[in-house]
Amino acid sequence: MQVKDLVVEFNVGRGRTVHAVSNISFDIARGETLGLVGESGCGKSTTARAIAGLLKSKSGSITFEGQELTSLAPAQLRSIRPRMQVVFQDPISSLNPRRRVRDIVGDPLQVWGRKDPGGELVSRSLEAVGLDPDLVGDRLAHQLSGGQCQRVSIARALILSPELLICDEPVSALDVSVQAQVLNLLEDLKSKFGLTMVFVSHDLGVVRNVTDRTAVMYLGKLCEILPSVELFHFPMHPYTVLLASASDDSSDSAGIEVKTDEMPSAMAPPGGCRFRTRCPFASSICAEEEPMFRELGPGHFVACHHPVTMPRTIPVRAAEAVAS
Image (cartoon, rainbow, N blue to C red; front, side, top):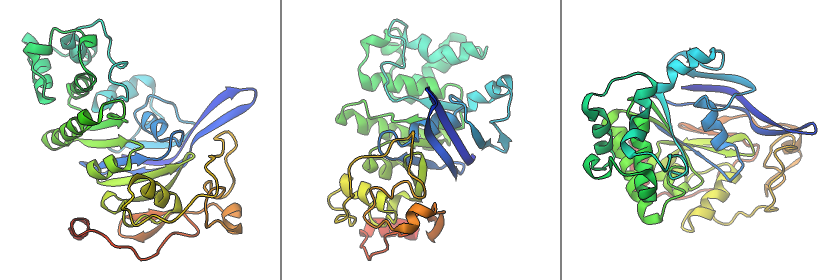
């Protein structure tokens, strides 16, 4: 998938507009897991929903397997939906509590008129996510735990054999003990079914462990794209450095502080670099000129006039991963 100059805005009345996503571009390789990270309100979930076709973009292009999606008629876009599925943040509210698990998972087959004699496809999909169809198939969704509900959501997304799976904060609503189980499940499913994934999260530790590359967003803009193995040890954008130090005290990124904790409004974002009002390295050029992406390392792109390039160390395991 290629996303180019994507813009998503929301009219909130009285002439006010929320600039949720502003001219961002990135690509996703087949078989890759791309992480989207940033603070709440940075536009990461909006981006994920836009590329899934759940939100209409104002401008820009989204190309999936060579086909441009934003110009398609609704019927044409609908025909592509089985190839792109979404796992939502809250597993309990994304399921109908009064329906049986077997019916929930089989719904996509009903929608697309695909036959499932004896419920074999539903059973295989439940088994793929670690649920026994004989034990949970006839239960109602409200009788399941949060972790089980998320497994059902994943089974429902997989039953149409999608190529791209978009996970919008899939573990943030779960207990810590259950999060690891769901993350391991997603890793196994990616390998088993050859999935390409977009993984949205505010937790950098999770993103580092489950993604190949990470795209960092701030106030509707992309500020850095880097290999995930470098996330805690070679961040170059001041905002990524701050996120890394806040997520991991052992990170080599500690020691930088924001000028203010207050994020500007998405209805009136700053000109130039949007992070400049909080950046400790901001200068006059940051207000006058929007920074463009530059490749400062292999596969490491930064949109900053004053990238952080101080010497830092990297653990042996991470160094080996970078070398490979």
